[in-house]
Length: 336
Image (cartoon, rainbow, N blue to C red):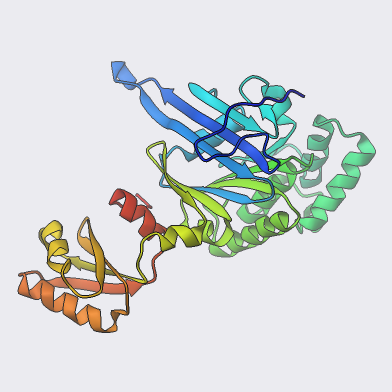
């Protein structure tokens, strides 16, 4: 097993720090453009470190570069530039060694459909060097932990989406990896299955498992992640705890007002209202960030809009969310 000691990253961490399990600096990936078009930068000069035992999230819309980042950190995608260290191993220089310290749950179902639930775990263990006795013991442990014991001899094609996803997570940690990568782990799951998988992830975290997950669900990132990076167009726009990211808006309340007309002009009309910290025009609406209560501010905002010649078609107030942070950074919806 080969280790490396690169220079510090912009956030001050190095892979020699006792709690830095994932480290990357200047990590980039470009793809050729179609029909002679310019190259496309899927990930652009990404630098971050993930601490031992934390759940770290990459939050962003589809196409933000999250899956490409995971691909580079898990040896599936060769970077165009930069460095990546996982579990003390340079994943670019030593991909085979890196695979021994990572577990990966991709977006698509990769279970072997010719094997039973139990066999998917057993043969994965054998592939990673466990003898038959160890693989059987570990399989039994994981079937119980992931509440799949009753389906041990079932064909994987008979599993529900939630069960299949739990089995993929169980298989990914079969060999006790240092880092578990979950790429959009709850995409396509119903709400009940999503919550069940959240419980599995939190249980693994409680056992000390380091987890990096990607998601475009702000509730998921807020619920699960100790820290997260908000990504868009291959770049990290902000990185902190969910609470600190929301606090960075500098507002206690957010009011969203929908209207027709020039949203920039409407945003400007609100700028001088007492308690308004700032405003943001987003397609068809204006987001108003307040330092105080909405009780008195909302009627004032509606009256100000009417005085300026606008008709408000809808208004709602909410506490700032991670989506609020994303919109504040990019001017567009997180789900686009």
